[in-house]
Image (cartoon, rainbow, N blue to C red; front, side, top):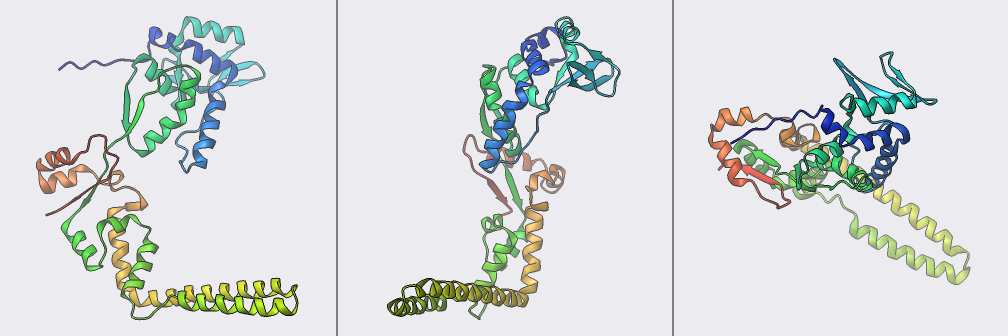
Length: 310
């Protein structure tokens, strides 16, 4: 096996992206492209992973690495006295391209230019970040790697599995929000009916008959009956919510157990793998845990793996 270490702060490598650096310094093209991608992805429910700046380059020299900003045709290095006119800036870029360091917006473009990849394997946040850059790659005609979501695991110890079973839930149920679980528990375990579904249907039919009767007398009364119906149904739905809240108070212990399980499986409402360290599981199961993770790892299937103690 051969390990190759590549230092990217190299004049020859940076020169490969000099045209992109110049475009960013003079025209701020990248920020406009990525802002449009962010807006589109946000509409689709993706969280913003990295916001662009007008200029997405740092100036790198000795121990200095600071942002570059442009004001009224002059480029300055933030927190440093270095300033460039347009001609001085382009001369510096031509003679010392290694002094220009891409930030998170241009880094992927630089990375795939000097070390092209067929695919990129990463977590949800990482793949969302790369999606923000797709249009940027298309604009500069750099091949964009195939994005593959990596494996994610949820480790469920026996004590938690037993508690979940005691609550009459499945492990998969705990992917739901906590309040949804509590509502399900109350509806399943309560001896009192907290739903007014049948009653609401009867009320709606009753108001429909009122509307026909009122319409026969005066057509203008139809809207008035509709408004009364809407108000009545709303008040009854509020009653239904109050009944459910009152019934929930009878299941305080179970709610606490749901909270404990939820907090362990999804700490901070995030993935367990973002909080727990493998060392805990290694200490408990030994080296066998590594083989288990390897054996249970999927290839290209887009599924979430749940591991439980037997």
